[in-house]
Amino acid sequence: MKILPEISRTLSEYLLIPGLTTEDCTPDTVDLGAPMVRHRVGEDPAVRVATPLVSAIMQAVSSPALAVALAQAGGLSFIHQNQRIEEQAADVLAVKRHKAGFRTVDVTVAAQTPLGELARLLADTEHGLAVVTENGEADGAFLGIISRDDFHLERHGALETAGNRMRGREGLMTAPASVSLSDANELIWRHHLDVLPVVEGGRVVSLVLKSDYQAHKTYHRASVDGEKRLRVGAGINSRDYKDRIPALMEAGADVLCLDSSDGYSVYQAKTLEFARDAYGEDVFVGAGNVVDGRAFRYLAEAGAAFVKVGIGGGAICTTREQKGIGRGQASALLDVVQARDAYARETGVYVPLCCDGGLLSDAHMAVALAMGADFVMLGRYFARLDESPSRKLQIDGQWYKEYWGEGSRRAQNAARYGQRGRMAFEEGVDGYVPYAGSLYDTVERTRAKLTSTMISCGSTNLRDFHRDAVLVPVSAESFKQTGAEVQLRRPAIDAGE
Ligand code: IMP
Image (cartoon, rainbow, N blue to C red; front, side, top):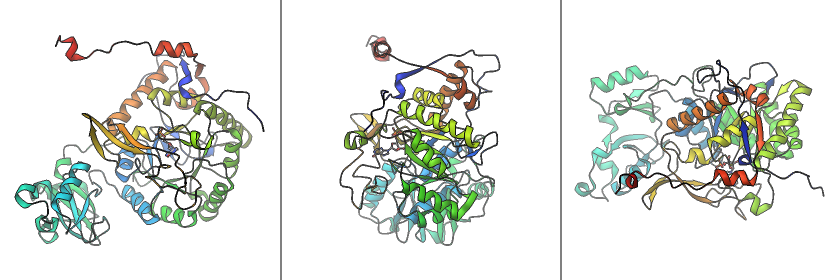
Protein backbone atom coordinates (compact mmCIF):
# COMPACT_ATOMS: atom_id res chain seq x y z
CA MET A 1 0.00 0.00 0.00
CA LYS A 2 1.17 3.49 -0.79
CA ILE A 3 -0.40 6.85 -0.02
CA LEU A 4 0.37 9.75 -2.35
CA PRO A 5 1.46 12.84 -0.44
CA GLU A 6 -0.80 15.21 -2.37
CA ILE A 7 -4.44 16.08 -1.83
CA SER A 8 -6.73 15.25 -4.74
CA ARG A 9 -7.95 18.57 -6.19
CA THR A 10 -10.81 19.57 -8.47
CA LEU A 11 -10.79 22.16 -11.25
CA SER A 12 -12.72 24.75 -9.25
CA GLU A 13 -9.81 24.92 -6.80
CA TYR A 14 -7.73 26.85 -9.33
CA LEU A 15 -7.83 30.29 -10.91
CA LEU A 16 -5.86 31.72 -13.81
CA ILE A 17 -3.65 34.76 -13.31
CA PRO A 18 -3.86 37.15 -16.29
CA GLY A 19 -0.77 37.49 -18.49
CA LEU A 20 0.21 40.49 -20.62
CA THR A 21 -2.41 41.13 -23.31
CA THR A 22 -0.74 42.50 -26.40
CA GLU A 23 -2.33 44.27 -29.39
CA ASP A 24 -2.11 41.16 -31.53
CA CYS A 25 -4.22 39.21 -29.03
CA THR A 26 -7.81 39.84 -30.20
CA PRO A 27 -10.94 37.73 -30.73
CA ASP A 28 -10.03 37.45 -34.41
CA THR A 29 -6.53 36.15 -33.78
CA VAL A 30 -7.36 33.62 -31.05
CA ASP A 31 -7.40 30.08 -32.47
CA LEU A 32 -9.16 27.46 -30.34
CA GLY A 33 -8.19 24.66 -32.74
CA ALA A 34 -6.86 21.46 -31.18
CA PRO A 35 -5.26 18.20 -32.35
CA MET A 36 -7.40 15.12 -31.77
CA VAL A 37 -5.01 12.31 -32.65
CA ARG A 38 -1.39 11.33 -32.10
CA HIS A 39 1.14 12.90 -34.42
CA ARG A 40 4.85 13.70 -34.59
CA VAL A 41 5.75 16.84 -32.67
CA GLY A 42 5.83 19.80 -35.05
CA GLU A 43 3.70 18.05 -37.70
CA ASP A 44 -0.03 18.44 -38.37
CA PRO A 45 -2.35 15.79 -36.91
CA ALA A 46 -4.63 13.89 -39.30
CA VAL A 47 -7.69 15.03 -37.33
CA ARG A 48 -8.11 18.47 -35.77
CA VAL A 49 -11.12 20.27 -34.36
CA ALA A 50 -11.63 24.04 -34.58
CA THR A 51 -13.68 23.99 -31.36
CA PRO A 52 -12.09 21.87 -28.61
CA LEU A 53 -15.37 20.37 -27.40
CA VAL A 54 -16.52 16.77 -27.94
CA SER A 55 -19.72 15.14 -26.76
CA ALA A 56 -19.76 12.26 -24.30
CA ILE A 57 -20.21 8.65 -25.43
CA MET A 58 -23.67 8.48 -23.87
CA GLN A 59 -27.21 7.50 -24.90
CA ALA A 60 -28.61 10.74 -23.48
CA VAL A 61 -26.10 12.86 -25.38
CA SER A 62 -24.60 11.68 -28.65
CA SER A 63 -27.26 11.06 -31.30
CA PRO A 64 -26.84 11.71 -35.05
CA ALA A 65 -28.73 15.03 -34.73
CA LEU A 66 -26.39 16.28 -32.00
CA ALA A 67 -23.37 14.96 -33.90
CA VAL A 68 -24.36 16.93 -37.01
CA ALA A 69 -24.87 20.16 -35.05
CA LEU A 70 -21.64 19.80 -33.07
CA ALA A 71 -19.56 19.00 -36.16
CA GLN A 72 -21.08 22.08 -37.82
CA ALA A 73 -20.02 24.12 -34.78
CA GLY A 74 -16.44 22.82 -35.15
CA GLY A 75 -16.45 20.05 -32.49
CA LEU A 76 -17.04 16.32 -32.70
CA SER A 77 -19.46 13.77 -31.24
CA PHE A 78 -18.86 10.19 -30.24
CA ILE A 79 -21.92 8.11 -31.13
CA HIS A 80 -22.58 5.88 -28.11
CA GLN A 81 -21.76 2.17 -28.15
CA ASN A 82 -24.51 1.03 -25.80
CA GLN A 83 -26.58 -0.22 -28.75
CA ARG A 84 -26.41 -2.96 -31.35
CA ILE A 85 -23.46 -2.72 -33.75
CA GLU A 86 -25.76 -2.23 -36.77
CA GLU A 87 -27.65 0.58 -35.03
CA GLN A 88 -24.47 2.40 -34.08
CA ALA A 89 -23.04 2.00 -37.60
CA ALA A 90 -26.31 3.37 -39.04
CA ASP A 91 -26.00 6.42 -36.74
CA VAL A 92 -22.45 7.02 -37.95
CA LEU A 93 -23.56 6.63 -41.55
CA ALA A 94 -26.39 9.13 -41.02
CA VAL A 95 -23.85 11.77 -39.94
CA LYS A 96 -21.43 10.97 -42.76
CA ARG A 97 -24.28 11.19 -45.26
CA HIS A 98 -25.59 14.43 -43.86
CA LYS A 99 -25.73 17.18 -46.38
CA ALA A 100 -26.43 20.74 -45.24
CA GLY A 101 -30.14 21.40 -45.50
CA PHE A 102 -30.94 17.66 -45.47
CA ARG A 103 -32.43 16.49 -42.17
CA THR A 104 -32.04 13.04 -40.68
CA VAL A 105 -35.31 11.18 -40.13
CA ASP A 106 -35.95 11.49 -36.41
CA VAL A 107 -39.54 10.27 -36.02
CA THR A 108 -40.83 7.13 -37.69
CA VAL A 109 -44.09 5.30 -37.02
CA ALA A 110 -45.91 2.31 -38.47
CA ALA A 111 -49.16 2.61 -40.46
CA GLN A 112 -51.00 1.01 -37.49
CA THR A 113 -49.70 3.58 -34.97
CA PRO A 114 -52.73 5.35 -33.39
CA LEU A 115 -52.93 9.11 -33.96
CA GLY A 116 -52.97 9.68 -30.16
CA GLU A 117 -49.57 7.99 -29.84
CA LEU A 118 -48.24 9.86 -32.88
CA ALA A 119 -49.38 13.22 -31.44
CA ARG A 120 -47.58 12.47 -28.15
CA LEU A 121 -44.43 11.47 -30.04
CA LEU A 122 -44.45 14.65 -32.10
CA ALA A 123 -45.04 16.78 -29.01
CA ASP A 124 -42.29 15.04 -27.01
CA THR A 125 -39.73 15.34 -29.78
CA GLU A 126 -40.94 18.76 -30.96
CA HIS A 127 -41.09 17.57 -34.54
CA GLY A 128 -43.68 18.65 -37.06
CA LEU A 129 -43.87 15.41 -39.01
CA ALA A 130 -43.17 11.69 -39.00
CA VAL A 131 -42.20 9.24 -41.71
CA VAL A 132 -44.49 6.18 -41.91
CA THR A 133 -42.66 2.92 -42.66
CA GLU A 134 -43.65 -0.73 -42.96
CA ASN A 135 -42.05 -1.77 -39.64
CA GLY A 136 -42.25 1.60 -37.89
CA GLU A 137 -38.43 1.83 -37.82
CA ALA A 138 -36.13 4.21 -39.70
CA ASP A 139 -34.79 1.32 -41.83
CA GLY A 140 -38.27 0.16 -42.89
CA ALA A 141 -39.83 0.50 -46.35
CA PHE A 142 -41.25 3.99 -46.95
CA LEU A 143 -45.08 4.21 -46.90
CA GLY A 144 -45.86 7.89 -46.44
CA ILE A 145 -45.53 11.14 -44.51
CA ILE A 146 -47.82 12.44 -41.79
CA SER A 147 -47.51 15.94 -40.33
CA ARG A 148 -49.35 17.77 -37.55
CA ASP A 149 -51.47 19.41 -40.28
CA ASP A 150 -52.70 16.05 -41.60
CA PHE A 151 -54.87 15.21 -38.59
CA HIS A 152 -56.80 16.64 -35.67
CA LEU A 153 -57.36 14.44 -32.64
CA GLU A 154 -60.87 15.76 -31.96
CA ARG A 155 -61.94 15.36 -35.56
CA HIS A 156 -60.27 12.03 -36.36
CA GLY A 157 -60.00 10.40 -32.91
CA ALA A 158 -56.95 9.21 -30.99
CA LEU A 159 -57.52 5.60 -32.10
CA GLU A 160 -57.58 6.29 -35.82
CA THR A 161 -54.35 5.04 -37.43
CA ALA A 162 -51.51 7.04 -38.96
CA GLY A 163 -51.92 4.97 -42.14
CA ASN A 164 -55.43 6.36 -42.69
CA ARG A 165 -54.36 10.02 -42.44
CA MET A 166 -50.87 9.92 -44.00
CA ARG A 167 -50.00 11.24 -47.43
CA GLY A 168 -49.16 7.98 -49.19
CA ARG A 169 -45.88 7.51 -50.98
CA GLU A 170 -47.59 7.20 -54.44
CA GLY A 171 -48.94 10.74 -54.22
CA LEU A 172 -45.72 12.31 -52.94
CA MET A 173 -42.91 13.88 -54.88
CA THR A 174 -39.57 12.38 -53.80
CA ALA A 175 -35.94 12.86 -54.84
CA PRO A 176 -33.03 10.43 -55.23
CA ALA A 177 -30.05 10.50 -52.81
CA SER A 178 -27.92 12.25 -55.44
CA VAL A 179 -30.13 15.38 -55.41
CA SER A 180 -28.37 18.66 -54.56
CA LEU A 181 -29.84 21.10 -52.04
CA SER A 182 -30.51 23.72 -54.69
CA ASP A 183 -32.35 21.17 -56.90
CA ALA A 184 -34.32 19.97 -53.86
CA ASN A 185 -35.35 23.53 -53.03
CA GLU A 186 -36.25 24.14 -56.66
CA LEU A 187 -38.68 21.17 -56.53
CA ILE A 188 -40.12 22.36 -53.22
CA TRP A 189 -40.93 25.84 -54.54
CA ARG A 190 -42.06 24.75 -58.00
CA HIS A 191 -44.50 22.13 -56.68
CA HIS A 192 -45.60 24.00 -53.51
CA LEU A 193 -44.27 21.22 -51.23
CA ASP A 194 -43.70 21.53 -47.49
CA VAL A 195 -41.41 18.49 -47.44
CA LEU A 196 -39.35 16.53 -49.97
CA PRO A 197 -38.39 12.99 -48.88
CA VAL A 198 -35.03 11.82 -50.27
CA VAL A 199 -35.39 8.12 -51.02
CA GLU A 200 -32.83 5.40 -51.70
CA GLY A 201 -33.61 1.69 -52.05
CA GLY A 202 -37.23 2.24 -50.94
CA ARG A 203 -36.15 3.94 -47.65
CA VAL A 204 -36.19 7.59 -46.68
CA VAL A 205 -32.60 8.66 -46.07
CA SER A 206 -33.31 12.34 -45.35
CA LEU A 207 -35.89 15.08 -45.62
CA VAL A 208 -35.65 18.58 -47.06
CA LEU A 209 -38.11 20.93 -45.36
CA LYS A 210 -39.45 24.16 -46.81
CA SER A 211 -39.34 25.64 -43.30
CA ASP A 212 -35.53 25.18 -43.27
CA TYR A 213 -35.04 27.27 -46.41
CA GLN A 214 -34.37 30.51 -44.52
CA ALA A 215 -32.42 28.85 -41.72
CA HIS A 216 -29.85 27.24 -44.00
CA LYS A 217 -26.45 28.58 -43.03
CA THR A 218 -22.89 27.78 -43.91
CA TYR A 219 -20.65 26.74 -41.08
CA HIS A 220 -17.15 28.02 -41.69
CA ARG A 221 -15.66 26.11 -38.73
CA ALA A 222 -17.27 22.75 -39.44
CA SER A 223 -15.27 19.58 -38.73
CA VAL A 224 -15.15 17.92 -42.15
CA ASP A 225 -13.12 15.14 -43.76
CA GLY A 226 -11.21 15.29 -47.06
CA GLU A 227 -14.48 14.84 -48.96
CA LYS A 228 -16.21 17.67 -47.06
CA ARG A 229 -18.41 15.22 -45.13
CA LEU A 230 -18.99 16.04 -41.47
CA ARG A 231 -16.67 14.22 -39.11
CA VAL A 232 -18.02 11.89 -36.44
CA GLY A 233 -16.53 9.66 -33.76
CA ALA A 234 -17.88 6.46 -32.23
CA GLY A 235 -17.49 4.65 -28.92
CA ILE A 236 -16.26 1.05 -28.78
CA ASN A 237 -15.68 -1.42 -25.95
CA SER A 238 -13.04 -4.05 -25.25
CA ARG A 239 -15.51 -6.96 -25.65
CA ASP A 240 -17.09 -6.97 -29.09
CA TYR A 241 -14.40 -4.84 -30.75
CA LYS A 242 -13.56 -7.46 -33.38
CA ASP A 243 -17.04 -6.98 -34.85
CA ARG A 244 -17.75 -3.38 -33.85
CA ILE A 245 -14.58 -1.76 -35.19
CA PRO A 246 -14.96 -3.13 -38.76
CA ALA A 247 -18.64 -2.07 -38.88
CA LEU A 248 -17.82 1.46 -37.68
CA MET A 249 -14.88 1.78 -40.07
CA GLU A 250 -17.11 0.63 -42.91
CA ALA A 251 -19.70 3.26 -41.93
CA GLY A 252 -16.99 5.93 -42.11
CA ALA A 253 -16.28 6.83 -38.45
CA ASP A 254 -13.36 9.28 -38.35
CA VAL A 255 -12.21 8.53 -34.80
CA LEU A 256 -13.05 5.72 -32.38
CA CYS A 257 -12.81 5.83 -28.62
CA LEU A 258 -12.75 3.06 -26.02
CA ASP A 259 -15.59 3.76 -23.63
CA SER A 260 -14.65 2.64 -20.14
CA SER A 261 -14.79 4.09 -16.65
CA ASP A 262 -11.32 2.62 -15.95
CA GLY A 263 -9.07 2.25 -19.00
CA TYR A 264 -5.83 1.06 -17.37
CA SER A 265 -6.24 -2.53 -18.52
CA VAL A 266 -4.75 -5.15 -20.81
CA TYR A 267 -8.15 -5.34 -22.51
CA GLN A 268 -7.70 -1.81 -23.85
CA ALA A 269 -4.17 -2.67 -25.05
CA LYS A 270 -5.54 -5.75 -26.85
CA THR A 271 -8.25 -3.69 -28.54
CA LEU A 272 -5.71 -1.11 -29.69
CA GLU A 273 -3.49 -3.89 -31.03
CA PHE A 274 -6.38 -5.43 -32.97
CA ALA A 275 -7.26 -2.06 -34.54
CA ARG A 276 -3.67 -1.38 -35.51
CA ASP A 277 -3.17 -4.87 -36.99
CA ALA A 278 -6.38 -4.62 -38.99
CA TYR A 279 -6.23 -0.98 -40.17
CA GLY A 280 -2.65 0.28 -39.61
CA GLU A 281 -2.40 4.06 -39.89
CA ASP A 282 -6.00 4.44 -41.07
CA VAL A 283 -7.63 3.97 -37.69
CA PHE A 284 -7.56 6.32 -34.69
CA VAL A 285 -8.63 4.84 -31.38
CA GLY A 286 -8.69 6.97 -28.23
CA ALA A 287 -8.37 5.13 -24.90
CA GLY A 288 -9.11 5.73 -21.22
CA ASN A 289 -10.24 6.84 -18.81
CA VAL A 290 -7.13 7.27 -16.67
CA VAL A 291 -6.12 9.47 -13.74
CA ASP A 292 -2.36 9.11 -13.56
CA GLY A 293 0.82 9.18 -15.60
CA ARG A 294 1.46 5.41 -15.37
CA ALA A 295 -1.83 4.61 -17.02
CA PHE A 296 -1.27 7.30 -19.65
CA ARG A 297 2.10 5.83 -20.64
CA TYR A 298 0.67 2.31 -20.80
CA LEU A 299 -2.05 3.39 -23.24
CA ALA A 300 0.23 5.70 -25.24
CA GLU A 301 2.69 2.83 -25.72
CA ALA A 302 -0.18 0.57 -26.72
CA GLY A 303 -0.96 3.01 -29.56
CA ALA A 304 -3.82 5.16 -28.24
CA ALA A 305 -4.68 8.04 -30.62
CA PHE A 306 -5.55 10.19 -27.59
CA VAL A 307 -6.08 9.51 -23.92
CA LYS A 308 -9.13 10.48 -21.92
CA VAL A 309 -8.61 11.68 -18.35
CA GLY A 310 -11.17 11.51 -15.53
CA ILE A 311 -12.70 8.98 -13.16
CA GLY A 312 -15.59 9.80 -10.93
CA GLY A 313 -16.07 13.49 -11.75
CA GLY A 314 -19.09 13.22 -14.09
CA ALA A 315 -22.27 15.08 -13.12
CA ILE A 316 -24.26 11.82 -13.06
CA CYS A 317 -21.41 9.74 -11.63
CA THR A 318 -21.43 7.77 -8.39
CA THR A 319 -18.28 5.71 -9.09
CA ARG A 320 -16.34 7.31 -6.23
CA GLU A 321 -19.09 6.47 -3.73
CA GLN A 322 -19.68 2.98 -5.10
CA LYS A 323 -16.14 1.74 -5.70
CA GLY A 324 -13.87 4.22 -3.92
CA ILE A 325 -11.84 4.87 -7.09
CA GLY A 326 -11.14 8.18 -8.79
CA ARG A 327 -9.13 11.35 -8.40
CA GLY A 328 -9.87 15.07 -8.41
CA GLN A 329 -9.91 16.18 -12.03
CA ALA A 330 -7.21 18.84 -11.61
CA SER A 331 -4.77 16.47 -9.88
CA ALA A 332 -5.43 13.78 -12.47
CA LEU A 333 -4.96 16.16 -15.37
CA LEU A 334 -1.75 17.72 -14.03
CA ASP A 335 -0.19 14.29 -13.49
CA VAL A 336 -1.18 13.01 -16.93
CA VAL A 337 -0.07 16.24 -18.66
CA GLN A 338 3.43 15.75 -17.22
CA ALA A 339 3.48 12.18 -18.52
CA ARG A 340 2.19 13.30 -21.95
CA ASP A 341 4.91 15.96 -22.25
CA ALA A 342 7.64 13.56 -21.08
CA TYR A 343 6.44 10.99 -23.63
CA ALA A 344 6.54 13.64 -26.39
CA ARG A 345 10.10 14.65 -25.43
CA GLU A 346 11.31 11.05 -25.38
CA THR A 347 9.57 9.71 -28.45
CA GLY A 348 8.79 12.79 -30.57
CA VAL A 349 5.13 11.69 -30.55
CA TYR A 350 2.39 13.93 -29.15
CA VAL A 351 -0.64 12.10 -27.77
CA PRO A 352 -3.49 14.58 -27.16
CA LEU A 353 -5.40 14.56 -23.87
CA CYS A 354 -9.13 14.84 -23.43
CA CYS A 355 -10.44 16.10 -20.08
CA ASP A 356 -13.65 14.16 -19.46
CA GLY A 357 -16.33 14.69 -16.81
CA GLY A 358 -17.27 17.18 -14.16
CA LEU A 359 -16.80 20.33 -16.25
CA LEU A 360 -19.59 22.35 -14.73
CA SER A 361 -18.88 25.70 -16.33
CA ASP A 362 -17.01 27.40 -19.15
CA ALA A 363 -14.48 28.53 -16.52
CA HIS A 364 -13.74 24.87 -15.70
CA MET A 365 -13.09 24.26 -19.40
CA ALA A 366 -10.69 27.23 -19.49
CA VAL A 367 -8.81 25.89 -16.46
CA ALA A 368 -8.64 22.37 -17.95
CA LEU A 369 -7.29 23.71 -21.26
CA ALA A 370 -4.79 25.91 -19.40
CA MET A 371 -3.58 22.89 -17.43
CA GLY A 372 -2.76 21.10 -20.67
CA ALA A 373 -5.91 19.33 -21.90
CA ASP A 374 -6.18 19.50 -25.70
CA PHE A 375 -9.94 19.16 -25.77
CA VAL A 376 -12.78 18.48 -23.34
CA MET A 377 -15.55 15.89 -23.33
CA LEU A 378 -18.95 17.00 -22.03
CA GLY A 379 -22.09 15.09 -21.12
CA ARG A 380 -24.37 17.31 -19.01
CA TYR A 381 -23.45 20.37 -21.08
CA PHE A 382 -24.81 18.83 -24.30
CA ALA A 383 -27.68 16.88 -22.72
CA ARG A 384 -29.31 20.25 -21.85
CA LEU A 385 -29.59 21.33 -25.47
CA ASP A 386 -32.28 21.10 -28.17
CA GLU A 387 -30.20 18.73 -30.29
CA SER A 388 -29.69 16.04 -27.61
CA PRO A 389 -31.89 12.96 -28.00
CA SER A 390 -33.45 13.10 -24.54
CA ARG A 391 -36.97 14.22 -23.68
CA LYS A 392 -37.67 17.85 -22.80
CA LEU A 393 -40.20 18.27 -20.00
CA GLN A 394 -41.62 20.86 -17.64
CA ILE A 395 -41.38 20.52 -13.86
CA ASP A 396 -42.89 23.25 -11.66
CA GLY A 397 -42.87 25.68 -14.57
CA GLN A 398 -39.21 25.12 -15.46
CA TRP A 399 -38.00 23.29 -18.56
CA TYR A 400 -35.62 20.37 -18.16
CA LYS A 401 -34.07 17.66 -20.32
CA GLU A 402 -33.53 14.13 -19.13
CA TYR A 403 -29.95 13.08 -18.45
CA TRP A 404 -28.84 9.68 -17.21
CA GLY A 405 -25.44 8.09 -16.65
CA GLU A 406 -24.16 5.17 -18.67
CA GLY A 407 -23.65 3.42 -15.33
CA SER A 408 -27.29 3.91 -14.33
CA ARG A 409 -29.81 1.12 -14.40
CA ARG A 410 -31.61 2.95 -17.19
CA ALA A 411 -28.59 2.77 -19.54
CA GLN A 412 -27.59 -0.82 -18.62
CA ASN A 413 -24.14 -0.27 -20.14
CA ALA A 414 -22.49 -3.29 -18.52
CA ALA A 415 -19.60 -3.28 -21.05
CA ARG A 416 -18.47 0.19 -19.92
CA TYR A 417 -18.34 -0.82 -16.29
CA GLY A 418 -16.64 -4.20 -16.65
CA GLN A 419 -19.72 -5.98 -15.30
CA ARG A 420 -21.05 -9.18 -16.82
CA GLY A 421 -24.56 -9.29 -18.31
CA ARG A 422 -27.01 -7.29 -16.22
CA MET A 423 -25.49 -4.73 -13.90
CA ALA A 424 -25.17 -5.80 -10.25
CA PHE A 425 -24.87 -2.21 -8.98
CA GLU A 426 -25.15 1.29 -10.40
CA GLU A 427 -22.37 3.83 -10.93
CA GLY A 428 -24.57 6.62 -12.23
CA VAL A 429 -27.89 8.34 -11.68
CA ASP A 430 -30.91 9.07 -13.87
CA GLY A 431 -32.35 12.58 -13.67
CA TYR A 432 -32.98 15.97 -15.27
CA VAL A 433 -30.82 18.97 -16.17
CA PRO A 434 -32.10 22.52 -16.80
CA TYR A 435 -32.90 23.04 -20.49
CA ALA A 436 -30.47 25.46 -22.13
CA GLY A 437 -31.59 26.05 -25.75
CA SER A 438 -29.72 25.62 -29.00
CA LEU A 439 -26.31 23.97 -29.37
CA TYR A 440 -25.20 26.57 -31.90
CA ASP A 441 -25.80 29.49 -29.48
CA THR A 442 -24.42 27.66 -26.45
CA VAL A 443 -21.20 26.56 -28.15
CA GLU A 444 -20.73 30.07 -29.59
CA ARG A 445 -21.04 31.55 -26.08
CA THR A 446 -18.53 29.04 -24.70
CA ARG A 447 -16.14 29.85 -27.53
CA ALA A 448 -16.49 33.56 -26.74
CA LYS A 449 -15.67 32.96 -23.06
CA LEU A 450 -12.68 30.70 -23.78
CA THR A 451 -11.40 33.25 -26.27
CA SER A 452 -11.78 36.02 -23.71
CA THR A 453 -9.90 34.01 -21.06
CA MET A 454 -7.07 33.38 -23.50
CA ILE A 455 -6.89 37.08 -24.36
CA SER A 456 -6.64 37.90 -20.64
CA CYS A 457 -3.81 35.40 -20.36
CA GLY A 458 -2.08 36.75 -23.48
CA SER A 459 -2.32 33.54 -25.58
CA THR A 460 -3.58 33.27 -29.14
CA ASN A 461 -3.55 29.47 -29.43
CA LEU A 462 -3.91 26.48 -27.14
CA ARG A 463 -0.28 25.41 -27.43
CA ASP A 464 0.90 28.79 -26.10
CA PHE A 465 -1.86 28.71 -23.49
CA HIS A 466 -0.51 25.34 -22.20
CA ARG A 467 3.00 26.77 -22.02
CA ASP A 468 2.27 30.24 -20.62
CA ALA A 469 -0.77 29.88 -18.36
CA VAL A 470 -0.18 30.67 -14.70
CA LEU A 471 -2.59 29.05 -12.28
CA VAL A 472 -3.00 29.39 -8.57
CA PRO A 473 -4.84 27.17 -6.07
CA VAL A 474 -7.57 29.03 -4.22
CA SER A 475 -8.06 28.84 -0.45
CA ALA A 476 -11.31 27.96 1.25
CA GLU A 477 -11.62 31.65 2.27
CA SER A 478 -11.38 32.76 -1.38
CA PHE A 479 -14.19 30.33 -2.17
CA LYS A 480 -16.33 31.98 0.47
CA GLN A 481 -15.63 35.42 -0.98
CA THR A 482 -16.61 34.25 -4.47
CA GLY A 483 -19.85 33.00 -2.99
CA ALA A 484 -20.71 36.26 -1.08
CA GLU A 485 -24.47 36.61 -1.09
CA VAL A 486 -26.03 39.31 -3.25
CA GLN A 487 -29.77 39.50 -3.79
CA LEU A 488 -30.03 39.18 -7.57
CA ARG A 489 -32.04 41.75 -9.50
CA ARG A 490 -35.49 40.60 -10.52
CA PRO A 491 -37.29 42.81 -13.05
CA ALA A 492 -40.68 42.48 -11.30
CA ILE A 493 -39.27 43.73 -7.95
CA ASP A 494 -37.32 46.57 -9.60
CA ALA A 495 -40.50 47.77 -11.25
CA GLY A 496 -42.03 48.07 -7.76
CA GLU A 497 -44.66 45.36 -8.39
P1 IMP B 1 -20.41 15.34 -17.36
O1 IMP B 1 -19.92 16.16 -18.51
O2 IMP B 1 -20.00 15.87 -16.04
O3 IMP B 1 -21.87 15.07 -17.44
O4 IMP B 1 -19.66 13.93 -17.47
C1 IMP B 1 -19.75 13.10 -18.59
C2 IMP B 1 -18.81 11.93 -18.40
O5 IMP B 1 -19.18 11.16 -17.26
C3 IMP B 1 -18.81 10.93 -19.54
O6 IMP B 1 -18.03 11.33 -20.64
C4 IMP B 1 -18.27 9.67 -18.88
O7 IMP B 1 -16.87 9.65 -18.82
C5 IMP B 1 -18.80 9.79 -17.47
N1 IMP B 1 -20.01 8.98 -17.24
C6 IMP B 1 -21.05 8.76 -18.05
N2 IMP B 1 -22.00 8.02 -17.44
C7 IMP B 1 -21.52 7.76 -16.22
C8 IMP B 1 -22.05 7.04 -15.11
O8 IMP B 1 -23.16 6.51 -15.10
N3 IMP B 1 -21.23 6.95 -14.02
C9 IMP B 1 -20.00 7.51 -13.99
N4 IMP B 1 -19.49 8.25 -14.97
C10 IMP B 1 -20.25 8.37 -16.08
